[in-house]
Image 1 (cartoon, rainbow, N blue to C red):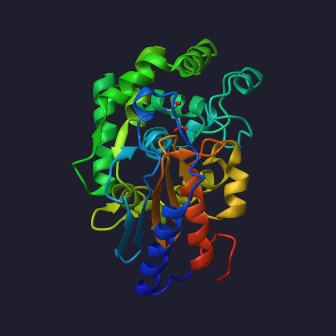
Image 2: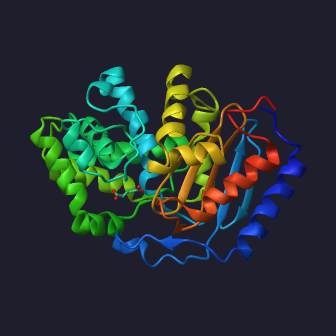
Length: 314
Ligand code: GLU
């Protein structure tokens, strides 16, 4: 895949920002996590980091937002570094075709979550990352990992968001206890959930997020820092993002956008064009599947304008 000239890409980004500013159907801001309900729906940001390090920013690209489930990509990367392919004994690799917090599927499949990007799967991943640590240390390790990936130590975890979710996340509490009953959670559910809620409460801007995704664009290499994962692992994480990154709308995202992407209920999406670009978009209004309405539309516009798609020879 090739990259358009830098000036063309700037024009494309400007056009996307202008188009999104006109949009009247902006979706609904998630309200089930107390701290998210008050985020203004008119926000839109986009950041593109190219393989050569060039950065294109548009709209509210520098404003931090709650990355929520996008953190599952970084947590998975950490967990694979700890236990490697053994992780796949406890978590599957298939799209779920069910809402991100479904308990029925977990029952039918004996406590083994379908993939690491639905909540149950991410809770198992958090359990893996907790092994040998106190929760505080595991949360600190996660934060330091994201600092390293983004090359930015100003990134924080929003305690109030984590606390709000701990107080209202009854379904996640149920999922965790359910898996504990099946023996697929090795630590007490409240400790694992503490870690999970904190990783979801990472606040990052589009620019920081696109920077943090560079290793997935570059076959596992982080410019200036060396290797995060080997090329095969980077490829596989991208494959999971493509097939499972958008809850039960992952197929539709692959159809419409055609590149690996992971969304979160904070309205962010991290998307990767292997070898070419790491992209983050943010708009807090969600569509009926819980994915950023404008973020998805913006990525669709971007892939149309650039020809970027893992299904294209262009
Ligand atoms: N912390 C959220 C939850 O567990 C993450 C959901 C998401 O972004 O998909 O409900």
